[in-house]
Length: 271
Figure 1: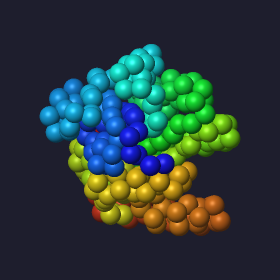
Figure 2 (figure 1 turned 90 degrees about the vertical axis):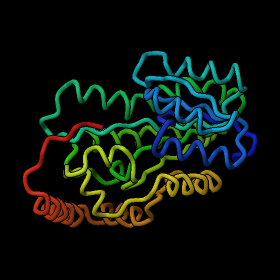
Figure 3 (figure 1 turned 120 degrees about the vertical axis):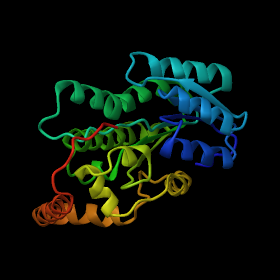
């Protein structure tokens, strides 16, 4: 997919990976990019930073009907949406101690928002016989996330949603990609530094959001299903499939090394 003259929507677009994607799409010649986010101060900052082709929308992806309203607003002002980027996501830093409220929130953001985005935008795409869905999952969706059970589960589910959409609608003109980065220098990393879930990805090396955005542009052009800004993730994924027991043993060793280096942990502050 070429981005020239395209209409794009990005949720979670006011900072981090989302904002880097917005800027990359504009640089690639997008006609308009709708920046949707719950964080109104960062939305205001993004509005000042971006050119007139970007519009900002205060959107809570967990609110019933919010994504449908977003799609309606964008289509009425900018025309049919060519690319919908479902990027909003959160972590929990919890294990079996995760509360029902934590599970509900992370499930609604990391999984159901992808489903509801597809429900909202696919009818017009299918009517035209073309469209592109890009969802941000995580390397944790292909592997796992040490120290964060809800994040691991929901990111696996996010990959499954993208796979299902690609299989179900791929012969009807719909392209689907799933972004699965490892560690990226974002607020999520900075806010919970010192927790095992964060230190695990830090230990593997961090990319900048702009590096992820470059990988996404390349992946969209070649229409790859999996977009892997950290190429080593493909090798880890292969090893996991070929010898699950060996891979699990390696992950336990990594966990022991991280926990041994950290010592007692303070509770995470949240995403």
